[in-house]
Amino acid sequence: MTHLAADLTSTFTAEGAEPFTVDAALEAADEENLVILGPSGSGKTLLLETVAGFHQHDGTVTANGTDITDRPPERREFGFVFQDYALFPHMTVRENVRYGTRYCDAPRDADELLSELGVADLADRNPPTLSGGEKQRVALARALAVRPELLLLDEPLAALDVPTRQSLRDDLVDVLADVTSIYVTHNRTTARAIADRIVVMADGRIVQRGTPEAVFERPDSPMVASFTGSNVIELSSAPAVRSLLDGHNADGSDVHGTAERVVIRPEAIRLEDIDGDLRATVRRVVREDATYRVTLAFDDVTVESFVDVPPEVGDEVMITLPRERLHSC
Image 1 (tube, rainbow, N blue to C red):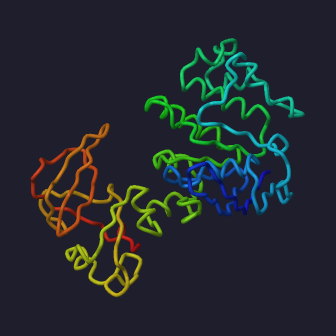
Image 2: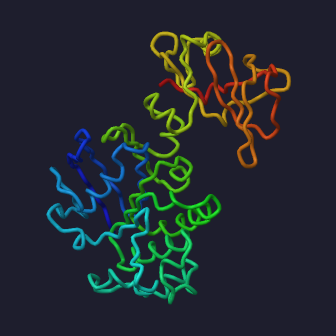
Image 3: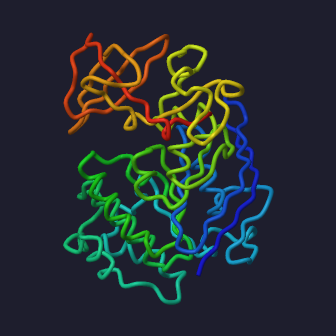
């Protein structure tokens, strides 16, 4: 059973740069996968490293109610997976996995872990001979070998090609099912796929927290909405949408009286053959894997939608904005 709570503040300085302060409080419940999501430079990695004990800070870090603020990283019983793998090139894969177990009373068997992660045949090779995906699986095995109370992962998929990233992401869903973890990423697809809860960071602070559905479907601000891929519609520029809402959002909130904007997911907007809520012009069509991202213009705004069968640029189309998917922001 592991429950982590952190409430900390730390200021970072670098030559030629303005000081940057991370000021955040978060919790990870037992066997919960908490994802820290945010753009580059938002402080995600600094927060994770501070929780791990790599940086001095004000405030506290507790694990299962015990204050571990003053413990060095190697005594916190955390596992850490780095974006750049951090494997020792002169050691074999097996030796890398066993490296941290000297601090552990009951480590997991290295060969067993490598087998579970599909890289048992690499045990006697050295990291420079491995692909990026293979290195990251070895790094994950090393972090798990110490039976960590908490697993910390810093953008472990960021440097991988798309097929490898998708494969390892699927495996991570299984690996993280029985572990308390905090996972840092800027990738909203990864966040939505693996998170039990998400905290969104911007400028060193947490600006929203909640389930994946809450964060993606009901963002608290235009910044969160845009970063998570929602359309942000300023009602002052979209009289057709204001008229469509007829004064109320799906949740009963007064749109005419108070809201300045609404948000809606691209996948919620439907292109219709005949009937729809309003008419729009197709401005751009971009192929994305097995679907198409379509940019649509109406009034003085543009929105994006995903379709399987693309229209032509310049086409006039009818679109539907489901009321239950429109939310004030």
